[in-house]
Image (tube, rainbow, N blue to C red):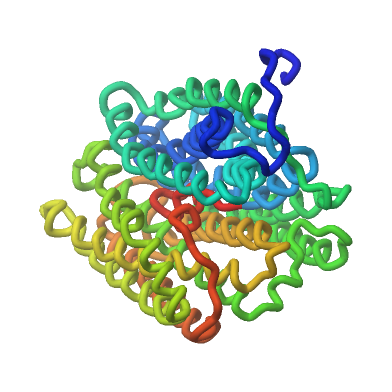
Length: 495
Protein backbone atom coordinates (compact mmCIF):
# COMPACT_ATOMS: atom_id res chain seq x y z
CA UNK A 1 0.00 0.00 0.00
CA UNK A 2 2.78 2.41 0.89
CA UNK A 3 4.44 1.90 -2.47
CA UNK A 4 1.30 3.08 -4.26
CA UNK A 5 1.23 6.42 -2.46
CA UNK A 6 2.48 9.58 -4.10
CA UNK A 7 6.06 10.48 -3.37
CA UNK A 8 6.17 11.92 0.14
CA UNK A 9 8.26 14.87 1.12
CA UNK A 10 11.19 14.10 3.33
CA UNK A 11 9.78 13.52 6.80
CA UNK A 12 11.46 14.98 9.81
CA UNK A 13 13.11 12.59 12.18
CA UNK A 14 11.13 11.05 15.00
CA UNK A 15 10.05 13.49 17.74
CA UNK A 16 11.34 16.46 15.71
CA UNK A 17 8.20 17.76 13.95
CA UNK A 18 7.24 21.33 14.87
CA UNK A 19 3.60 22.20 15.29
CA UNK A 20 3.67 25.33 13.12
CA UNK A 21 4.84 23.40 10.04
CA UNK A 22 2.57 21.92 7.35
CA UNK A 23 3.71 18.42 8.35
CA UNK A 24 2.72 19.11 11.95
CA UNK A 25 -0.77 20.19 10.96
CA UNK A 26 -1.20 17.17 8.69
CA UNK A 27 -0.21 14.82 11.52
CA UNK A 28 -2.84 16.35 13.82
CA UNK A 29 -5.45 16.11 11.06
CA UNK A 30 -4.72 12.43 10.49
CA UNK A 31 -4.90 11.67 14.21
CA UNK A 32 -8.19 13.56 14.60
CA UNK A 33 -9.78 11.81 11.61
CA UNK A 34 -8.60 8.39 12.74
CA UNK A 35 -9.76 8.62 16.33
CA UNK A 36 -12.85 10.52 15.22
CA UNK A 37 -14.26 7.71 13.08
CA UNK A 38 -13.91 5.23 15.93
CA UNK A 39 -15.63 7.55 18.38
CA UNK A 40 -18.32 8.76 16.00
CA UNK A 41 -19.23 5.23 14.96
CA UNK A 42 -19.54 3.89 18.48
CA UNK A 43 -21.61 6.85 19.69
CA UNK A 44 -24.04 6.79 16.82
CA UNK A 45 -24.42 3.01 16.84
CA UNK A 46 -25.89 3.29 20.32
CA UNK A 47 -28.55 5.70 19.03
CA UNK A 48 -29.15 3.45 16.01
CA UNK A 49 -29.94 0.31 18.00
CA UNK A 50 -33.76 0.63 17.98
CA UNK A 51 -33.77 1.25 14.21
CA UNK A 52 -31.45 -1.74 13.71
CA UNK A 53 -33.77 -3.86 15.83
CA UNK A 54 -36.82 -2.91 13.78
CA UNK A 55 -35.12 -3.40 10.41
CA UNK A 56 -33.34 -6.67 11.20
CA UNK A 57 -36.03 -8.07 13.54
CA UNK A 58 -33.63 -8.15 16.49
CA UNK A 59 -34.55 -8.43 20.16
CA UNK A 60 -32.72 -6.84 23.09
CA UNK A 61 -30.29 -9.76 23.38
CA UNK A 62 -29.29 -9.25 19.75
CA UNK A 63 -28.78 -5.54 20.34
CA UNK A 64 -26.62 -6.36 23.35
CA UNK A 65 -24.42 -8.39 21.01
CA UNK A 66 -24.14 -5.50 18.53
CA UNK A 67 -22.43 -3.51 21.28
CA UNK A 68 -20.63 -6.25 23.19
CA UNK A 69 -18.91 -7.93 20.23
CA UNK A 70 -17.26 -4.62 19.36
CA UNK A 71 -16.28 -3.99 22.98
CA UNK A 72 -15.12 -7.59 23.33
CA UNK A 73 -12.60 -7.57 20.50
CA UNK A 74 -11.54 -3.98 21.11
CA UNK A 75 -11.12 -4.32 24.87
CA UNK A 76 -9.28 -7.62 24.76
CA UNK A 77 -6.93 -6.64 21.90
CA UNK A 78 -6.30 -2.98 22.75
CA UNK A 79 -3.05 -3.52 24.63
CA UNK A 80 -1.86 -5.93 21.92
CA UNK A 81 -2.64 -3.29 19.28
CA UNK A 82 -0.48 -0.77 21.09
CA UNK A 83 2.35 -3.30 21.37
CA UNK A 84 2.15 -4.05 17.64
CA UNK A 85 2.43 -0.35 16.89
CA UNK A 86 5.50 -0.02 19.10
CA UNK A 87 7.08 -3.08 17.51
CA UNK A 88 6.22 -2.73 13.82
CA UNK A 89 5.55 0.98 13.43
CA UNK A 90 2.78 3.18 14.73
CA UNK A 91 1.88 4.66 11.36
CA UNK A 92 1.78 1.20 9.78
CA UNK A 93 -0.61 -0.17 12.42
CA UNK A 94 -2.67 3.02 12.38
CA UNK A 95 -3.18 2.77 8.62
CA UNK A 96 -3.90 -0.97 8.87
CA UNK A 97 -6.52 -0.20 11.51
CA UNK A 98 -8.09 2.48 9.33
CA UNK A 99 -8.32 0.19 6.30
CA UNK A 100 -9.72 -2.65 8.40
CA UNK A 101 -12.22 -0.32 10.06
CA UNK A 102 -13.44 0.90 6.68
CA UNK A 103 -13.83 -2.65 5.36
CA UNK A 104 -15.72 -3.69 8.49
CA UNK A 105 -17.91 -0.58 8.20
CA UNK A 106 -18.94 -1.67 4.69
CA UNK A 107 -19.85 -5.10 6.07
CA UNK A 108 -21.84 -3.52 8.89
CA UNK A 109 -23.70 -1.12 6.62
CA UNK A 110 -24.63 -3.83 4.13
CA UNK A 111 -25.56 -6.51 6.69
CA UNK A 112 -28.68 -8.41 5.66
CA UNK A 113 -29.24 -10.03 9.06
CA UNK A 114 -28.49 -9.35 12.68
CA UNK A 115 -25.98 -12.22 12.69
CA UNK A 116 -24.02 -10.64 9.85
CA UNK A 117 -24.02 -7.29 11.63
CA UNK A 118 -22.76 -8.82 14.88
CA UNK A 119 -19.94 -10.62 13.07
CA UNK A 120 -18.97 -7.44 11.22
CA UNK A 121 -18.94 -5.51 14.50
CA UNK A 122 -16.46 -8.03 15.89
CA UNK A 123 -14.17 -7.38 12.91
CA UNK A 124 -14.62 -3.65 13.42
CA UNK A 125 -13.44 -4.03 17.02
CA UNK A 126 -10.31 -5.87 15.88
CA UNK A 127 -9.50 -3.04 13.47
CA UNK A 128 -10.17 -0.42 16.13
CA UNK A 129 -7.70 -2.19 18.43
CA UNK A 130 -5.01 -1.31 15.89
CA UNK A 131 -6.38 2.16 15.16
CA UNK A 132 -7.24 3.55 18.58
CA UNK A 133 -3.87 3.24 20.38
CA UNK A 134 -2.04 4.83 17.45
CA UNK A 135 -3.88 8.16 17.37
CA UNK A 136 -2.21 9.95 20.25
CA UNK A 137 0.88 7.71 20.12
CA UNK A 138 1.70 9.13 16.68
CA UNK A 139 1.47 12.70 18.01
CA UNK A 140 3.49 11.91 21.12
CA UNK A 141 6.23 10.19 19.14
CA UNK A 142 6.38 12.64 16.21
CA UNK A 143 6.36 16.13 17.69
CA UNK A 144 9.24 17.98 19.23
CA UNK A 145 8.88 18.02 23.04
CA UNK A 146 8.44 21.79 23.04
CA UNK A 147 5.42 21.51 20.71
CA UNK A 148 3.91 18.26 21.97
CA UNK A 149 1.52 19.88 24.43
CA UNK A 150 0.26 22.30 21.80
CA UNK A 151 -0.29 19.47 19.32
CA UNK A 152 -2.17 17.40 21.89
CA UNK A 153 -4.30 20.42 22.76
CA UNK A 154 -5.24 20.96 19.11
CA UNK A 155 -6.02 17.26 18.72
CA UNK A 156 -8.16 17.32 21.84
CA UNK A 157 -10.02 20.49 20.92
CA UNK A 158 -10.88 19.31 17.42
CA UNK A 159 -11.97 16.01 18.93
CA UNK A 160 -14.28 17.92 21.25
CA UNK A 161 -16.00 19.47 18.23
CA UNK A 162 -16.57 15.97 16.80
CA UNK A 163 -17.82 14.83 20.20
CA UNK A 164 -20.49 17.52 20.27
CA UNK A 165 -21.51 17.12 16.60
CA UNK A 166 -21.60 13.31 16.53
CA UNK A 167 -25.01 12.67 18.12
CA UNK A 168 -26.69 15.31 15.97
CA UNK A 169 -25.16 14.03 12.73
CA UNK A 170 -25.85 10.42 13.58
CA UNK A 171 -29.41 11.04 14.72
CA UNK A 172 -30.15 13.01 11.57
CA UNK A 173 -28.75 10.23 9.35
CA UNK A 174 -30.78 7.58 11.17
CA UNK A 175 -34.03 9.54 11.12
CA UNK A 176 -33.70 11.02 7.61
CA UNK A 177 -32.14 8.18 5.64
CA UNK A 178 -31.13 4.91 7.33
CA UNK A 179 -29.09 3.49 10.19
CA UNK A 180 -26.80 2.02 7.52
CA UNK A 181 -25.32 5.44 6.80
CA UNK A 182 -23.92 5.44 10.33
CA UNK A 183 -21.36 2.96 9.00
CA UNK A 184 -20.99 4.19 5.42
CA UNK A 185 -20.18 7.75 6.56
CA UNK A 186 -16.86 6.38 7.83
CA UNK A 187 -15.56 5.69 4.34
CA UNK A 188 -14.67 9.21 3.12
CA UNK A 189 -13.21 10.08 6.54
CA UNK A 190 -11.03 6.97 6.50
CA UNK A 191 -9.93 7.61 2.92
CA UNK A 192 -8.80 11.11 3.86
CA UNK A 193 -6.97 9.86 6.96
CA UNK A 194 -5.13 7.14 5.03
CA UNK A 195 -4.09 9.55 2.28
CA UNK A 196 -2.73 12.03 4.83
CA UNK A 197 -0.89 9.31 6.75
CA UNK A 198 0.84 7.87 3.71
CA UNK A 199 1.98 11.25 2.48
CA UNK A 200 2.71 13.30 5.60
CA UNK A 201 3.00 11.19 8.76
CA UNK A 202 6.50 9.93 9.65
CA UNK A 203 6.92 6.36 10.84
CA UNK A 204 7.90 5.87 14.48
CA UNK A 205 8.49 2.79 16.61
CA UNK A 206 9.85 1.86 20.02
CA UNK A 207 13.41 0.61 19.57
CA UNK A 208 13.20 -1.06 22.97
CA UNK A 209 9.97 -2.95 22.20
CA UNK A 210 10.15 -6.74 22.76
CA UNK A 211 10.86 -8.81 19.67
CA UNK A 212 7.97 -11.12 20.51
CA UNK A 213 4.35 -10.06 20.87
CA UNK A 214 2.05 -11.92 23.27
CA UNK A 215 -0.44 -13.25 20.72
CA UNK A 216 -1.27 -16.27 22.92
CA UNK A 217 -2.32 -14.02 25.76
CA UNK A 218 -4.50 -11.92 23.46
CA UNK A 219 -6.27 -14.99 22.02
CA UNK A 220 -6.92 -16.46 25.47
CA UNK A 221 -8.28 -13.17 26.80
CA UNK A 222 -10.58 -12.63 23.81
CA UNK A 223 -11.78 -16.24 23.84
CA UNK A 224 -12.31 -16.26 27.58
CA UNK A 225 -14.32 -13.06 27.56
CA UNK A 226 -16.38 -14.28 24.59
CA UNK A 227 -17.37 -17.49 26.38
CA UNK A 228 -18.28 -15.77 29.63
CA UNK A 229 -20.21 -12.96 27.93
CA UNK A 230 -22.13 -15.45 25.77
CA UNK A 231 -23.20 -17.27 28.90
CA UNK A 232 -24.21 -14.05 30.66
CA UNK A 233 -26.33 -12.80 27.73
CA UNK A 234 -27.89 -16.03 26.48
CA UNK A 235 -28.14 -17.97 29.75
CA UNK A 236 -30.72 -15.92 31.68
CA UNK A 237 -32.94 -15.36 28.63
CA UNK A 238 -32.99 -19.03 27.61
CA UNK A 239 -33.12 -20.87 30.92
CA UNK A 240 -29.37 -21.62 30.94
CA UNK A 241 -29.18 -24.13 28.09
CA UNK A 242 -26.26 -26.55 27.92
CA UNK A 243 -24.49 -24.48 25.25
CA UNK A 244 -24.45 -21.38 27.45
CA UNK A 245 -23.20 -23.30 30.47
CA UNK A 246 -20.52 -25.08 28.43
CA UNK A 247 -19.24 -21.94 26.72
CA UNK A 248 -19.27 -20.07 30.01
CA UNK A 249 -17.15 -22.80 31.61
CA UNK A 250 -14.76 -22.84 28.63
CA UNK A 251 -14.47 -19.07 28.86
CA UNK A 252 -13.65 -19.22 32.56
CA UNK A 253 -10.96 -21.82 31.91
CA UNK A 254 -9.51 -19.66 29.12
CA UNK A 255 -9.36 -16.64 31.43
CA UNK A 256 -7.58 -18.72 34.07
CA UNK A 257 -5.14 -19.89 31.39
CA UNK A 258 -4.61 -16.28 30.34
CA UNK A 259 -3.58 -15.38 33.88
CA UNK A 260 -1.14 -18.29 33.94
CA UNK A 261 0.36 -17.29 30.58
CA UNK A 262 0.76 -13.67 31.62
CA UNK A 263 2.50 -14.69 34.86
CA UNK A 264 4.97 -16.96 33.08
CA UNK A 265 5.59 -15.04 29.86
CA UNK A 266 8.87 -13.16 29.48
CA UNK A 267 7.04 -10.49 27.49
CA UNK A 268 3.39 -10.57 28.61
CA UNK A 269 0.66 -8.53 26.99
CA UNK A 270 -0.28 -7.27 30.46
CA UNK A 271 2.59 -7.38 33.00
CA UNK A 272 0.54 -8.32 36.07
CA UNK A 273 3.26 -6.97 38.33
CA UNK A 274 1.91 -3.43 37.77
CA UNK A 275 -1.12 -4.41 39.87
CA UNK A 276 1.10 -4.75 42.94
CA UNK A 277 0.59 -1.01 43.29
CA UNK A 278 -2.41 -0.54 45.55
CA UNK A 279 -3.22 2.77 43.91
CA UNK A 280 -2.98 1.39 40.37
CA UNK A 281 -5.22 -1.56 41.25
CA UNK A 282 -7.61 0.66 43.17
CA UNK A 283 -7.90 3.22 40.38
CA UNK A 284 -8.65 0.47 37.88
CA UNK A 285 -11.24 -1.02 40.24
CA UNK A 286 -12.92 2.40 40.42
CA UNK A 287 -12.74 2.60 36.63
CA UNK A 288 -14.46 -0.78 36.33
CA UNK A 289 -17.28 0.15 38.70
CA UNK A 290 -18.01 3.61 37.27
CA UNK A 291 -17.75 2.72 33.60
CA UNK A 292 -19.66 -0.52 33.97
CA UNK A 293 -22.54 1.43 35.46
CA UNK A 294 -22.42 4.24 32.93
CA UNK A 295 -21.95 1.98 29.91
CA UNK A 296 -25.03 -0.08 30.79
CA UNK A 297 -26.98 3.07 31.68
CA UNK A 298 -26.44 4.73 28.30
CA UNK A 299 -27.23 1.49 26.45
CA UNK A 300 -30.57 1.02 28.24
CA UNK A 301 -31.48 4.71 28.29
CA UNK A 302 -31.18 5.28 24.55
CA UNK A 303 -33.20 2.13 23.81
CA UNK A 304 -35.80 3.06 26.45
CA UNK A 305 -36.20 6.61 25.14
CA UNK A 306 -36.87 5.44 21.59
CA UNK A 307 -38.78 2.23 22.25
CA UNK A 308 -41.00 3.34 25.14
CA UNK A 309 -41.10 7.14 25.13
CA UNK A 310 -41.24 7.82 21.38
CA UNK A 311 -37.98 9.74 21.03
CA UNK A 312 -36.41 9.94 17.59
CA UNK A 313 -32.81 8.76 17.13
CA UNK A 314 -31.70 12.40 16.97
CA UNK A 315 -33.49 13.28 20.19
CA UNK A 316 -32.20 10.21 22.02
CA UNK A 317 -28.61 10.79 20.93
CA UNK A 318 -28.76 14.48 21.75
CA UNK A 319 -30.13 13.73 25.22
CA UNK A 320 -26.60 12.75 26.29
CA UNK A 321 -24.99 16.00 25.15
CA UNK A 322 -25.06 17.69 28.59
CA UNK A 323 -22.67 15.02 29.91
CA UNK A 324 -20.22 15.67 27.08
CA UNK A 325 -20.39 19.45 27.48
CA UNK A 326 -19.86 19.39 31.24
CA UNK A 327 -16.92 17.01 30.96
CA UNK A 328 -15.35 19.12 28.23
CA UNK A 329 -15.74 22.37 30.18
CA UNK A 330 -14.82 21.32 33.69
CA UNK A 331 -12.72 18.14 33.71
CA UNK A 332 -9.41 19.92 33.14
CA UNK A 333 -10.22 22.23 36.07
CA UNK A 334 -10.99 19.18 38.15
CA UNK A 335 -7.60 17.79 37.20
CA UNK A 336 -5.92 21.02 38.30
CA UNK A 337 -7.68 20.81 41.66
CA UNK A 338 -6.53 17.21 42.10
CA UNK A 339 -3.03 18.40 41.31
CA UNK A 340 -3.22 20.62 44.39
CA UNK A 341 -5.16 18.53 46.93
CA UNK A 342 -4.68 14.95 45.71
CA UNK A 343 -7.26 12.79 43.91
CA UNK A 344 -8.87 10.93 46.81
CA UNK A 345 -11.65 13.39 47.69
CA UNK A 346 -12.83 13.90 44.11
CA UNK A 347 -12.64 10.19 43.29
CA UNK A 348 -14.73 9.43 46.36
CA UNK A 349 -17.36 12.14 45.93
CA UNK A 350 -17.58 12.09 42.12
CA UNK A 351 -18.92 8.52 41.76
CA UNK A 352 -21.54 9.25 44.44
CA UNK A 353 -22.69 12.26 42.41
CA UNK A 354 -22.84 10.05 39.31
CA UNK A 355 -24.92 7.56 41.31
CA UNK A 356 -27.37 10.31 42.24
CA UNK A 357 -27.76 11.23 38.57
CA UNK A 358 -28.29 7.63 37.50
CA UNK A 359 -30.83 7.26 40.28
CA UNK A 360 -32.75 10.23 38.85
CA UNK A 361 -33.08 8.33 35.57
CA UNK A 362 -35.45 5.92 37.30
CA UNK A 363 -38.04 8.72 36.82
CA UNK A 364 -37.72 8.46 33.03
CA UNK A 365 -41.05 6.93 32.06
CA UNK A 366 -43.91 7.57 29.61
CA UNK A 367 -45.64 10.86 30.31
CA UNK A 368 -42.57 12.68 31.64
CA UNK A 369 -40.81 15.26 29.51
CA UNK A 370 -37.10 15.43 28.78
CA UNK A 371 -36.79 18.65 30.80
CA UNK A 372 -38.20 17.18 34.01
CA UNK A 373 -36.69 13.68 33.88
CA UNK A 374 -33.72 13.23 31.54
CA UNK A 375 -32.01 16.63 31.61
CA UNK A 376 -31.60 16.91 35.41
CA UNK A 377 -30.10 13.43 35.50
CA UNK A 378 -27.69 14.20 32.67
CA UNK A 379 -26.52 17.39 34.39
CA UNK A 380 -25.86 15.56 37.67
CA UNK A 381 -24.11 12.67 35.89
CA UNK A 382 -21.98 15.09 33.88
CA UNK A 383 -20.99 16.95 37.04
CA UNK A 384 -20.02 13.68 38.70
CA UNK A 385 -17.95 12.48 35.77
CA UNK A 386 -16.24 15.86 35.44
CA UNK A 387 -15.31 15.57 39.10
CA UNK A 388 -14.08 11.98 38.78
CA UNK A 389 -12.38 11.36 35.46
CA UNK A 390 -9.37 13.68 35.54
CA UNK A 391 -8.24 12.60 39.03
CA UNK A 392 -8.87 8.99 38.05
CA UNK A 393 -6.71 9.27 34.94
CA UNK A 394 -4.01 11.07 36.88
CA UNK A 395 -4.04 8.44 39.62
CA UNK A 396 -3.51 5.65 37.10
CA UNK A 397 -0.59 7.47 35.49
CA UNK A 398 0.95 8.54 38.79
CA UNK A 399 0.89 5.00 40.16
CA UNK A 400 3.18 3.68 37.43
CA UNK A 401 6.67 4.74 36.37
CA UNK A 402 7.24 6.91 33.30
CA UNK A 403 8.56 3.99 31.25
CA UNK A 404 5.21 2.18 31.60
CA UNK A 405 2.93 5.23 31.34
CA UNK A 406 1.56 4.21 27.93
CA UNK A 407 0.96 0.67 29.17
CA UNK A 408 -0.83 1.94 32.26
CA UNK A 409 -3.13 4.11 30.17
CA UNK A 410 -3.83 1.25 27.75
CA UNK A 411 -4.68 -1.11 30.63
CA UNK A 412 -7.01 1.47 32.14
CA UNK A 413 -8.76 2.04 28.79
CA UNK A 414 -9.13 -1.72 28.32
CA UNK A 415 -10.60 -2.05 31.82
CA UNK A 416 -13.18 0.65 30.98
CA UNK A 417 -14.23 -1.17 27.81
CA UNK A 418 -14.39 -4.58 29.45
CA UNK A 419 -16.42 -3.07 32.27
CA UNK A 420 -19.02 -1.79 29.80
CA UNK A 421 -18.95 -5.12 28.01
CA UNK A 422 -19.73 -7.08 31.18
CA UNK A 423 -22.34 -4.60 32.41
CA UNK A 424 -24.26 -4.51 29.13
CA UNK A 425 -24.31 -8.31 29.24
CA UNK A 426 -25.33 -8.67 32.89
CA UNK A 427 -27.41 -5.69 33.99
CA UNK A 428 -30.58 -6.26 31.90
CA UNK A 429 -30.98 -9.80 33.24
CA UNK A 430 -30.13 -8.70 36.79
CA UNK A 431 -32.87 -6.06 36.57
CA UNK A 432 -35.43 -8.53 35.24
CA UNK A 433 -35.59 -6.97 31.77
CA UNK A 434 -36.67 -9.44 29.12
CA UNK A 435 -34.13 -9.71 26.32
CA UNK A 436 -36.61 -11.37 23.96
CA UNK A 437 -38.49 -8.18 23.21
CA UNK A 438 -41.12 -5.93 24.71
CA UNK A 439 -40.95 -2.82 26.84
CA UNK A 440 -38.15 -1.77 29.18
CA UNK A 441 -40.63 0.04 31.45
CA UNK A 442 -40.87 -2.69 34.06
CA UNK A 443 -37.18 -3.23 34.71
CA UNK A 444 -35.62 0.11 33.76
CA UNK A 445 -35.92 1.68 37.21
CA UNK A 446 -34.44 -1.41 38.83
CA UNK A 447 -31.55 -1.36 36.37
CA UNK A 448 -30.84 2.28 37.21
CA UNK A 449 -30.87 1.43 40.92
CA UNK A 450 -28.31 -1.34 40.40
CA UNK A 451 -26.12 0.92 38.27
CA UNK A 452 -26.29 3.68 40.89
CA UNK A 453 -25.27 1.21 43.58
CA UNK A 454 -22.31 0.12 41.48
CA UNK A 455 -21.02 3.68 41.17
CA UNK A 456 -21.30 4.12 44.94
CA UNK A 457 -19.11 1.02 45.27
CA UNK A 458 -16.61 2.83 43.04
CA UNK A 459 -16.55 5.79 45.43
CA UNK A 460 -16.00 3.49 48.42
CA UNK A 461 -13.15 1.75 46.62
CA UNK A 462 -11.53 5.11 45.91
CA UNK A 463 -11.77 6.09 49.57
CA UNK A 464 -10.13 2.82 50.63
CA UNK A 465 -7.37 2.58 48.02
CA UNK A 466 -6.38 6.06 46.77
CA UNK A 467 -3.80 7.95 48.79
CA UNK A 468 -5.13 11.19 50.24
CA UNK A 469 -2.39 13.39 48.83
CA UNK A 470 -0.86 11.16 46.20
CA UNK A 471 1.29 13.04 43.69
CA UNK A 472 -0.60 13.20 40.42
CA UNK A 473 0.53 14.10 36.92
CA UNK A 474 -0.71 17.22 35.22
CA UNK A 475 -3.83 16.20 33.35
CA UNK A 476 -4.94 17.83 30.12
CA UNK A 477 -8.31 17.72 28.43
CA UNK A 478 -6.83 15.08 26.13
CA UNK A 479 -6.22 12.82 29.12
CA UNK A 480 -9.76 13.34 30.33
CA UNK A 481 -11.36 12.47 27.02
CA UNK A 482 -9.40 9.26 26.64
CA UNK A 483 -11.07 6.95 24.26
CA UNK A 484 -13.62 4.62 25.44
CA UNK A 485 -15.87 3.88 22.56
CA UNK A 486 -18.80 3.69 24.91
CA UNK A 487 -21.14 6.62 24.38
CA UNK A 488 -20.01 9.76 26.23
CA UNK A 489 -17.58 7.78 28.37
CA UNK A 490 -13.95 8.87 28.02
CA UNK A 491 -14.22 10.23 24.58
CA UNK A 492 -10.63 10.47 23.42
CA UNK A 493 -7.71 8.08 23.45
CA UNK A 494 -4.56 8.32 25.53
CA UNK A 495 -1.92 5.75 24.71
